[in-house]
Image (cartoon, rainbow, N blue to C red; front, side, top):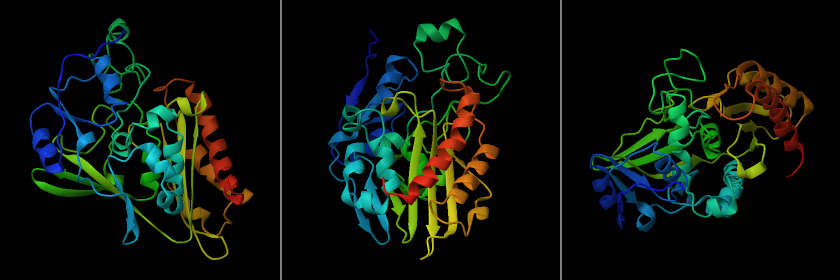
Length: 326
């Protein structure tokens, strides 16, 4: 049995109290705990203090305002997946939240936790004993990368379901610390260093995410796993198309994930302008873009070459599914 190490836990009642606690050296946030607790059991993290934010009473409300959705960071994935306004204005986000893990996990896991999900790799998300047998890696106790031989950077993969959708929708992260509030476009929130892939200070607390609302926009989130919802995605795509009154694309954003430590925004989407939403032509064009630009690594379970073949297929399926209701 994997046991948790001894650790102090404090449950503040307000955001102000929480950020004061986070200003202490070695403090970490915990809410649903579905990510950090397994990492603690595997000795992949060793904080001195866990700041339990489940009792904080003054997080923003999840609601529509001024052309955007404000989603509280402590909103559970179940709440997001079933919220009527999220379903109406950000359906791809509701979909992404609805396919994370299992119902019991979604009932506890929060959007803040999913946004800050640690990167994963087949060589590090193992027991301490297993890791010791291969000498560790850049993300744990060693100094080598087993995915990219001789690599100097960790290429553990972003496996969040919600993040690629939020990136495609150009969301903004709201952070609070003892220094005040800071707003960061989510497209600037991540980097390709698998060991420290989030551009956030350790004493900052995410209080909300703001998701822009647009008229005449069609969205879709698709992912592939072996065991359906139970597993982390092995590849995933967020597809967002703005269109005119005749259902022709006016702009497109495609974000692929589970490739590296940050989501990948595809280039060349201007080539999709003018194609009909849900059409075979749009599906083929999107599939071609994905096939040229997305090259999965062997950083998560399942063959990387097969995952590379799957991505364009799921991209085309996601596009053509837009022609009919789910």
